[in-house]
Every structure is written in C-alpha cells, then in structure tokens.
Length: 614
Image (tube, rainbow, N blue to C red; front, top):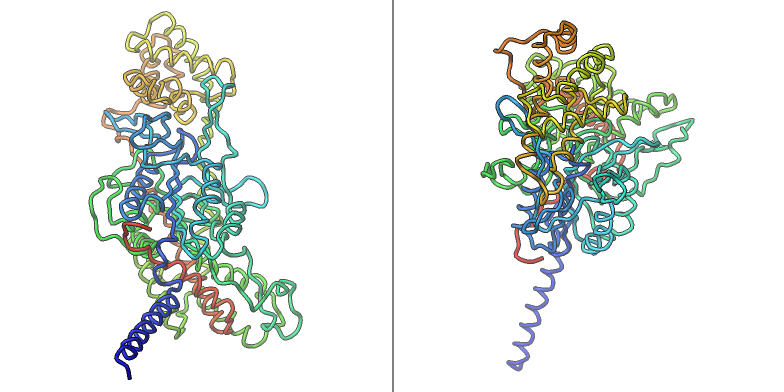
C-alpha cells in the first residue's frame, strides 16, 4: 500500500470517529440535558400595576435576577421588563416603585425609580412585541426560553376565568390633571400568551417560574384544563368525556412552576421587605437559584442548576400562604379530578380500572401507595421531606398532616378553595363610626386649619390636608378618612411630587409622607384635647380608648399567620397527586405516563453554564 493511501485512510477513519461522536452528542441532547446555549433566551418580567402597588420587594427580585443573568450570559440573550422601564445609567423619568421606610415608629411611604440594566417597560405592547420579534425567533430552532415572572397576578373578571399577569399600567396622557392615567387593559392572560407561544415557538420549549398571585393557571399554557378517560377503562357504557381521548399525546413543550394555585394569593410582595421576615416564593425561589440574599447581595450558597432545584429548596422553607406546584403536578391533579368526578360515577368500569380507582381513594385517605416504580418512590420521598417541613412549621397539626383522613383534612381546611379571594382592598369603616369624622370632627378641623389654629402642622402638610378634605366634601362617596391609607396613597403620590424624579422636592415629599403616616394619630390627639365635649366624644367613638404609651409597636410586613390551612391543603394535594400517578401506573396508561415524564424532564432542564457568548 502506498504510504499516502495509508495516511489518507487513517485520517478518513479518524474523521468518521469525530462525526460519529458529534452525532451521538446531538442525539443525546434531550429534555434533561443542557440545551444548545446559542438558541436560549432568558426573560425576567416584573413590576406591574401602578406605583401604588408595584412594591420594592418586586424590584429587589427583578434586580437580582437581571444582574445574575447578565453576569452569566451575553446581553443579547437576556430580556428584562420591569415597571416603567427606567434604565441604569440614564436619567430616571418616572418613580415606579413603592417603598415603605420605618422611622420613629411610623411606616413612611416613598417612591423611587427602579432602574435596571437594559430594562424595558413591562407593558403589554413591549412584552408581546419582544416575544414575537426577538425572543421566540431565537429559540424557535430548538432552544429554551427560561421565563421568570415575578409580577402581580390576578384572576380575570370575565368568563371563562383565567390567570392573568398585571402588566405596567401607567400611560402618559394630555387629558388628566397629572398627565398620566392607569390603563387596566395592560394585562396578559393564559389564552393570549399560549397563542403567542404556539405561533412562534417552533421547535423550541419554555421552562417557566411564576411567583405571583393566582399564577397556577399558567400551567395551562402547556396542557388542557381537562383530561379524558380511556374508553378501554369501561366495559359497557362509555362516558362522553372519553371522546377526547387519544393515544397520540404530544410531549410537553411548556412547563414549570408557580407559587400558588389559580384561585389563590401568593406571599412575599411587600413595600417594606424585612431581612428577617420577608417570606414567600417571591424571595425563596430566586434566592435558592442564585445562592444570594436578595436584600444584601451576600452569597448564601452555590447557584443551583435549574428552576426545579430552586423550587424544591424553596418548598422546604416556605411556610406562607403559598401553595407551590409544578406543571407535572398540575397534570396529575387534573387526573385526580377526573377520577373523583367522571370515574367516580362510572358504573361500567372494568374490574382493573375499578380496583385502580379504589386504590386512589385509599392513597388519598392516607394509605401508603406501595408502588414499586423507582421514579414514583423518589418523588414520594421528596413529598415526605416537604411534609415533615410542614409538620415542623405546624407542630400542633402534626398528626393531621401525617395521618389525618381525607375527611379530617377537608374538615380542617374548610369550604374555601383559595386563601384570600381578591384581597388587598380596605372595605371602609362602619358608616356610623365614619360620621364621627365627616359630620363632627372634620368641619371643626377644617376651620382650625384655615384659621391657623393648628400650630404644629407645616404649610405643605396643611395644604395637603385641606386638599383631602376638599375631595371628600366634593364627593361624599370618597373615603379619605385619616387612617385609610390605601385610599390616601394616590393623592400622596401625586401631591408630594414623587412621580417625576427630576421634579421631586425631596424635603416636601418626606414632609407630606410623614404627615400622612401620622395623620390619624395627630388629628385624634387634637380632637381629644379640644374644649368641645362633642369633639372629645366623637374622637372616643372614632378612635377608641386612648392606648397607653407602652402599646405594642406596629408590626411590619413579613410572613402571614402560620398558614395552617395552606399546609393542610398542600398535604392533601400531595396525596391526590400521588394517588393519580398510582392510578395511571395501575392501568398502564402509557400515553399519559409518557406525557407526565415529558413534563418532569422539561421542568428539570438545567440552565446553561455561564458563557462568554451565545
């Protein structure tokens, strides 16, 4: 053989080996392995609503995530949408972040712009345009969109109900007195977001994490609200629901984690986050993911590899009203509901299907599943760990959490499915009590202000107080009673000059904020010192008896009550999920089991390693 022929043959053989290795690598890049980083996108969405509701905790979360992602990945791979869109290094144009400060026993309102590097406004047009034109085209050839939503969330008012993200609602206008208005149409719901993703995702996929209220509905981005029974489970009459069953189920392409269910509020959104008391998925998940304290920036541990690892770490320490769960769990919960409704009335179930249904009910009642499947057993071990954390946080309910029957759990939980309705709005005081302010105290107080008989009030605070009284007098339906801070906050924001940073008089803003925080206490004290018996009596009826000087200090924001009800709901949810999984294994429902595996695999897709270019 000619020596050149031998060399050419050896080179050709080596080239074949390289090509085979590259082919093998490409073939093994599945849902559980690190994706092709050049096609990946990282999106942070937060800071919705108005300056009255866009809280400082949301800014801390968005800031930490934005900085962490931009330190790991090139700028062209990261999109951040927060509030009005103030950017680091540019003059701020609107104060979009509400922050409360604790001073001398008072909780003082303030507002500041929330600047972030390469930030964009968190408005509907901006978010949808970026998704359609920039983000989805990047991942459409097989990449992954890592979506973190820390915004406010709501349940839609119109039917059918769905989870919606409350986007940034402030818009400039020439028609209002202050040049701005709030647009409640700045929302993004499950159905619209699903349509956008389906139109542009191509061969890409989405792994998400939502830490907002009412976020559970976003699991339906990647799965239907109902699942169908297999006709083979019946030996006679087949229910109409089985018409939608198919053996050809698509594998998951959108999956992730939410802080709570579709009908519930979430914890952690606070204008005054406290280092020791700020709690909820809003804080725990990103802190676990980043390995960093969101308030101080100090390292607390290594960064985790995936949203799934961060979710599990947060679940162990989360003792709030949150009810966190994954898309895989939402999928199984839909099957649990199927078993409890359609199959419960299925008189023509086959013996095997009926036995599996009975096993489901025993598991939900507290019986050990006894399932041999290795993945199932591993997940049960995770749930056992979560359950023990709930027991440690609710020791008086230990027996109920560990071994209570389904009836006992449901009785203790009570009739409410969610945990607080819409929440967040003050209903106003009793009308008879309010009359003490509007009919007796307010007229005399107004006269005292106008005739300079209140020496302790500054000129700016007096003007603000008279403005509030004038608004109430012009519209008796407005309740700006001292102490109704939610109602007064909007007036404080605009009258204090806090809205436009370049025009803000910092001294005046602080002065009005301090007056607003102490307004009720000072007016009551003034009325109680009055020579008028009518004023003193009205103050007693309105404000109650005078508290001693040693009264308990005001409580700042932090974790709510021990969240016993939600702990019981979580425990029952774990049982229903495992019972549904055991049912699918018992009837060997391979289409659903394949779909379940694809959800679990997608949820665990790791973040790409830090790189210099994508």
